[in-house]
Length: 109
Image 1: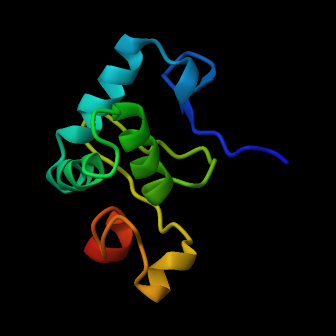
Image 2: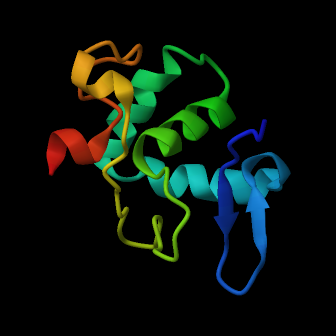
């Protein structure tokens, strides 16, 4: 069975997984996402579920908002481009992270 992996690609570089990013690359991505108010609130909410583990917090946020591997830029200098992520828990109201907290596209657009 294949394990789902989160990929990142910096402009002019090859794809890396979240596990292979340098600490500096990871921190740059985390801070870029965190500076947007709606993402900041979701990251705070996720931190209650993954205390002290920024990689798990960011990974879950990404899974909730950017699950498609496509050629669109999801995180840029000035914008976060959210996707509508198919989630079986969305319709049931059983999201362990809280209703309409982490899935930005479903609750804000």
